[in-house]
Length: 110
Image (spheres, rainbow, N blue to C red):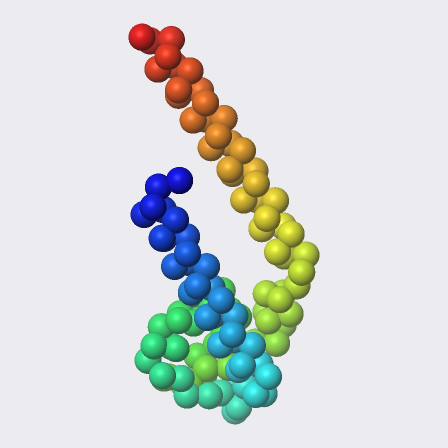
């Protein structure tokens, strides 16, 4: 695998781990309603930006965030992880088949 691809994958995995820790912290500290929202640093606010889009984290007021309990339950559901793993396996399999077809086409063309 290409070194740049590996580095990108490591960066994505590290960011996801940071997101999980931050959301878990917000949840554990009771930031589950707009009234209990916590002010986050700018770097932490950027970190949860994608989770705001998914509805897991809600920006109650500028810079103050809380966890939506229903979306949090969905987000932490172990079944969700299994579904994502199945999708990744399917996509990877399709990519391998397409790559094989392209390589076979190149070999035939020579």
